[in-house]
Image 1 (cartoon, helix red, strand yellow):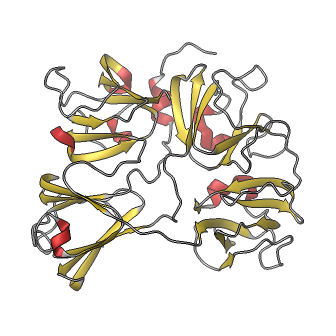
Image 2: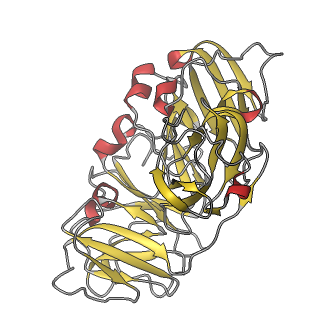
Image 3: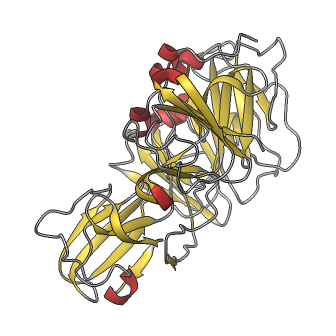
Length: 409
C-alpha cells in the first residue's frame, strides 16, 4: 500500500473506460442546450410526442450508445438526418425544422453500463483509480495501473481474472468475484494484466485457472469461449456487448469452441478486429469450430435473441436506473451534460466537459463526488453526497477544474 495521494501526471496518462453513459437523448428548444427540454429513450416519436413543439428543435444531446434521426415532416416523412453525438446548435437547414424523430440504440439489448470494476492504486479504495468494463486488458492497456493495483470494487455480476506473470492475460490466473479492500501480498502491486467477464455461476470463485470446461454451470447470461476444442483450454465468458480485437486480448485468433445459451446469439468476425467483414452467427454450442472459424475469430458481438421496446419521459427528470453521476453546465439539470463513472479525472477535458462549468449535478445514493478548484486535484475541494440543483449557497458554481467520483456502496 502506497501513500494515499493522486499523482497528477499519472492521472493524465490514464485512458478512461467509456460506455453508454445514458439511455436517453435530450432535446432542447433553444441552442446551447437551453430552453424547454425533453428526454427520450429508444423509440419512434411523432410531432406531438416530442414536447419541444413542432419545428422548435434547436440543440440535442446524444450519448454514446444511441443515435437520433430527425425528419422534416410528421410521421417520419420528408428529408432526414441522423446524429450519433450532441449538437449545440443545429445548422440553418435543420434548426427549428424537425417534426418527428426516431431514437435507436446502437448497443445490443441487455448491455448494462452499470456493470464495471473500479481499480485503485491504494488499499481501501483510495488513491487514483480507473474504471473498466468487461474485456481483456494487457499490461500496456492498464498503463500506470500495471503492477499498481492494491484494491478494487466490483459492481454488477462480474468477476476478474488477474495475471501476475504475464502482460498478455495468459498462463496462470486467479479469479475474484468479490470486492477486495486490500489485496494480499501475492497480488498487491503485482497484477500485470486482467480479464473482466460476467460470472457464470452464483457460487464463489478462486484458484488457478488452466482451462477445462465449465461442467454445465453455464447460465443464460453469457457466451463462453474456449481456446481448445471440447470446451477446454483457457476460457472467457462474455455477456451482451461489442468486443473488438483489443478487448479479446489473448483470445483473439485463438478460439476453438463456444457455448451459446438459448437466449443469446454470437456474431463472430473472421480476421477482422473492428467488427466488420466476413462474419458468422452462432445460436448453438460448437464443440469444435470449422476450419473457417477455428483460430480465426478476431472480434465478437454477443446479443440477446429477443428485443425490447422503449418509452418516453417528460419534464426535466431523466429516466431512472442509471447508477452514475451526471454533471451539468446549467442549474436545475440543464445545459450540456456528461455521465461520470467512478474514477479520478485530473482535468475536465478527460470527460469532454468544459472547465469551470459545473452548475448542477445528480448524485445517486451511495455515490460521493469531490470537486476541486484547480486541475490535478489542486486548490480547495468540496465533497458532495447528494444531488444539487445549484451551488449558490456553497459558492462553487462554475469553479470545478477536476473531479473524483467514488461509489461507496
